[in-house]
Image (cartoon, rainbow, N blue to C red; front, top):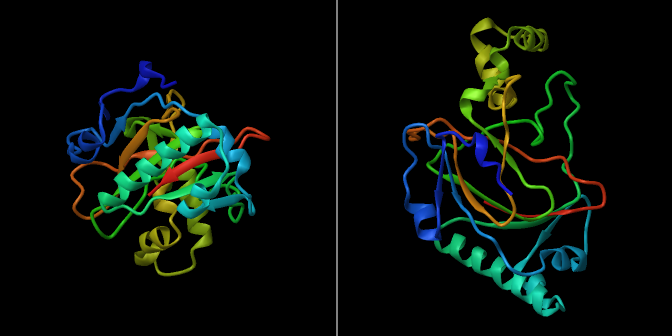
Length: 232
């Protein structure tokens, strides 16, 4: 379920795919969600896929080959239809079964993995699409409720200790190591779960963007419960 009590003005909800892809981001709106209650048994697909490592990419051919119950077949039909719609829009969907993501412990005071609130960056105009069909769902955060970590004085001081180049190159150093993409939630922040089955379009940091990029993060997975996620 989505917690609607703290969604604020940065989210716009739609009821179909065409509105999802054609509604422009504007003002504070940097997340658009197509809310859906999907039929079918997605857990059956998760349980029948041959896993390889902590993240398994499912190809369409493999999805077709799975022997499924009627509810599993219904779930597969939805996945393939979402795949087809996103591809027709020009996106490149990837369907994953996720046990867990690798965590970054290179700098203990500043992890740069996907469990940290972050924004996506691209040199060209593009959006991030994602949908969680099973397991814990991703979260977003209103931009007003997060602070860029590289602007927090104590964190910035630690980063300066890592950098040994000229002062004018420090900002480039932050960008090259993706430090400037990460945010810290404020003490009174209310992260918003994107829910199961809902297909989302999130604003990305790119040169032509008219809105701030959307802050988001991967959830901590429940032990023994893998996630089924489509993302592009």
